[in-house]
Image (tube, rainbow, N blue to C red; front, top):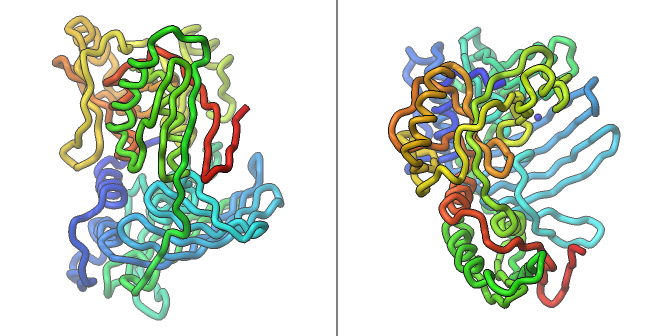
Length: 445
């Protein structure tokens, strides 16, 4: 559904929507003097995650792009990370009905053809908090008046929508508005649309703290078998030990290394939604690359690898932070690799967000200090296996023998990166052979 940041706003929102609060309680009446301030709008987002539950409706349209997209969903959210959602997607006229229950990183989709629930990797596309967080991430709230929403007075605020999320081609002029109940201080409606009416995004929130119960429909056990891509006379024992450490540090529950031989290795796990993460931990080398970067010049939708190399130099590459959800990056000089690492650790920053700290060699630290000193005001990209996982703006020259990866999307991602960097690449290259569920076997071929 690029990143010019109203940093303070973004940090406040992400802290609350992704990390959470320790206390939840009754809705309190806001102070009168705050009702027309940006602080009141920000506080409403803080209070949203502080509710034990709420219901929502979400509708969006994007027309005139490469593919017309439309969706309409309604559902319930239960603290801390459960949701029940039903509705439909429509891509280029092809419609798909969805009924989904999500619990943490586990997602269960109802299959109407078989009448059963299918477990799969959780998707953020229908997660109400993630949708709201990404839409309002740039902030810049400004009070513009009053309206009545659901028969009650609400303050209306304008804000700067996240253009890269709602319009990946970065072509539209979007207008964002958020309505905050004057009685409860909670957001009751958020709307974004473009002047040409080709982009529309609307979320309504209601029934806060209402009694809700969401049950996970199924639970199974699975076994994944991995085989060496090449014949091995040794190395599998060390591979199993390193992989066991990766799995342990990943934070995945119910996952264990069952057995290993000279040619194959088996892993047991409980959540089918974990399969992609397990495959990633087993098959990814965990190759680190830290590179200077810059934002591109000109229309981003015209960028290609060929255009990047001809414009910025033969060593330049095209990258995207967190997949392709934000503005593209031009990747320049390589500053650090795995060879420069002495160790890695997982932790949290001063805002309780997950981070990965890296201890680097003295030579690498000197190189990093010199490069960052001449790159102030531009991004520096952290890549794992060629994917940009973080791209903070350089605020000053780096100092000391520690590097830090910030801006990670989840605790799970941070622990996964920590595990890969701490163990280093696995000695044996493994490939998924099969996944078994209750005697039923699905081969990857």
